[in-house]
Length: 45
Image 1 (tube, rainbow, N blue to C red):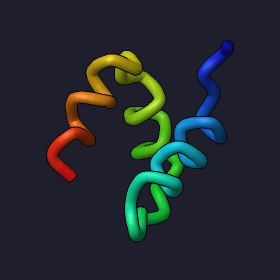
Image 2 (image 1 turned 120 degrees about the vertical axis):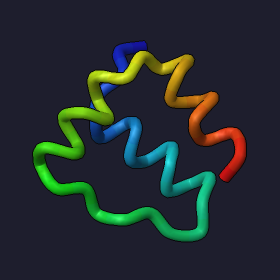
Image 3 (image 1 turned 60 degrees about the vertical axis):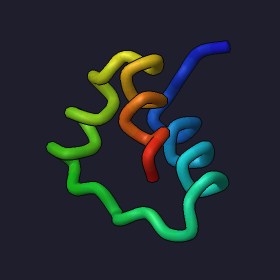
Image 4 (image 1 turned 180 degrees about the vertical axis):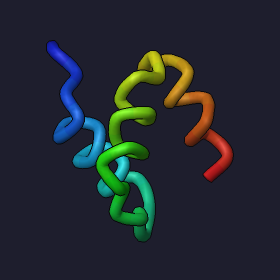
């Protein structure tokens, strides 16, 4: 499965009550984080 920004937003929205809308620069930074690191970052949410 290819991870895309839209997949990331879907997964985050499904696992949290609310998610801020990222600006384009922030979305690019988030997309640049490896998936395993993103999972660790979200594990305490």
